Length: 422
Image (cartoon, rainbow, N blue to C red):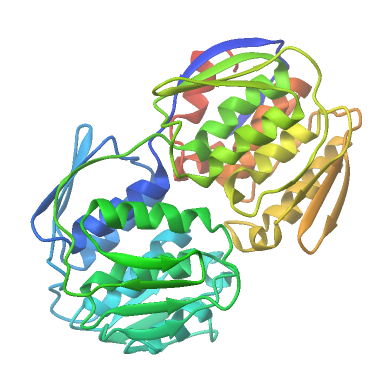
């Protein structure tokens, strides 16, 4: 199956933001570990979040998807399984990493595995940190990579973790920490990648009743014996997914409004809007909506996107139609995503005619006349959506494997067609 994207002129469109994938993952886990029931409203039901829900069910937690929500019956910090469990996390790195720490709350070993791409994504730093907290971690295959077998117990205490590859290593430990036998202290010897996601993790933990202290992004202490409490919890809109919709206005000209967003959100991908303003767009916010408008030209910028990794490809697509070069830094950890996003983005833009230079931690895009091509997203939802949007300005674009967007934005193609853009 393919999707063909044709050139369009300036747009005037209103979209609904899909629910946040990151918040849905974390609310599921907090609800699963809580005392009592949790009702999650407006969750994202997509491939990744269903994998997390399925993993929790494999650990003995009832998770019931209902119209408009999820009912989670918490285990009060102790999973109830009768023997060793294997959980297939598919291509969801968030699922595997967040479940790795909570697996220590099970009375029997838990094996976490996934797709062939997942087996190439490192988890060694998290494994070493868990061993410092009482876990026993082994690798049936390649050392430091899934599949990973986790047993032992979450004793607590002090540990150190390298979060430079993924802040999810840190989020994993923090989310499980309230259920540890002792308080948990986590020290980070180097700045974490995508650190804004730690703010998001702590936001969910706080809402579910956890108590913690922090010193920036260097040190965290989470109190044990303060269990999560089941509650009603509403998921806000996803700025990562909304970035593709905002980019339509930036790339094609015109005005796009996305409803269902929290303008005061701690989501780091809000920074994408700052980038658009710097490039020449206007941005206006209301209580639950954000509007992006472009009437003039776009200029290239230099920007650090290390805290907004999921919008780097979207920004690269916008940069390809700007009037001058754009340099995006903070990209090193994008090589460990669903695909090597730096390599795939560079290759695809070059095939379209753009000039691209890549370093270990940056990508520079020099605009040039572009032409449409057939894009292989390599199973990566973000690649498919970013280049679909760029195709609206270029025309003649074919997106292969369009179903990969089900991972995070199941209604993406319907959203575009509903506004007459496909």
